[in-house]
Amino acid sequence: MSATETAIASAEAHSAHNYHPLPVVVASAEGAWMTDVEGRRYLDLLAGYSALNFGHGNRRLIDAAKAQLERVTLTSRAFHHDRFADFCTRLAELCGMEMVLPMNTGAEAVETAVKTARKWGYRVKGVPDGMAKIIVASDNFHGRTTTIISFSTDPEARADYGPYTPGFEIVPYGDLTALREAMTENTVAVLIEPIQGEAGVLVPPAGYLPGVRELTRERNVLFIADEIQSGLGRTGKTFACEHEGVVPDMYVLGKALGGGVVPVSAVVSSADILGVFKPGEHGSTFGGNPLACAVALEVIAMLRTGEYQERAAELGDHLHRELGLLAGGGTVEAVRGRGLWAGVDIAPALGTGREISERLMEERVLVKDTHGSTIRIAPPLVISKEDLDWGLDRLRAVLSA
Image (cartoon, helix red, strand yellow):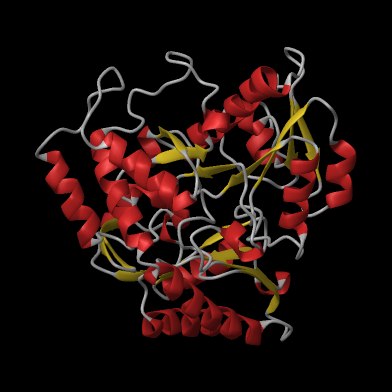
């Protein structure tokens, strides 16, 4: 067997199934390129589902991690450490908020947001104990914990994991009328993705996010924006909500916050909202650890320059122009997205999204499918225009073959 086949067979023998990865085994990576165990180079047009916004092996982030590795990596939250206050301050400033509650993974941050909203509902809004409701959108993807999959509409994510956590109301994404009708005096929050990633990079109708903001403010309900995939430069703005001039009550962040180096996530909000927690009521051994803070501080510093947001906007315009030329020609049925993020619906006659992804892999381009015939394109924000065009040329070749 080849080195690739050997590595995959070994993994299959000793790991439980979860993802369905493409049959490539990466050994090293730099910038927007990855090299497998056979020495073949691939253009990465997925960027770890936006965790690698700043590219593989970004020197600033690696240097920040190395420097911190020599000092201290973990104290637990039983003690203070000298990077924590700076991290919380800088992230709050970036978000235009006041307080930060750091965790590790995106799912942990979403769980934290759910707990925050419920506690705020009981302590501040005055909802009767055990009656809090959170409204979510259909086709959402917020993580894979038992509580989060309880409000998923994806059978693969949800099936066989019941009994499910109550307290959630699901309404159609982009439908303000349904959202308004679902609200009651016990509604404590609306939790949505400003752009739905796993669903196929679905951008809501113009005016939807401002409508959500207006409704939640009128009804004394928290607006929670899950910007784990859409945030931190991906769409051409620091946050996807900014495209419609919306500021939520709470940001849920992850993925790119750790720069593809370490898992870092956070809930960011006002003192009135996050102030509902008292010592000992929530926590994480690794959340806000020194290594995570050191890397995230460098991420925040990079975002404060605005150059990555500008790059995503400019290259994103180019990406969508080029993809738009493919739509309606019998190969691509629709293109959606914003910035360096696109969902491309392939004509079913050409193959499934998985089959197209595998054909692109043979052309040394890596993307990932979702929901049948859709592929997602989300390169690192550091990709060059030349490399992006090379990848688009490979896509054209695969679609015309």
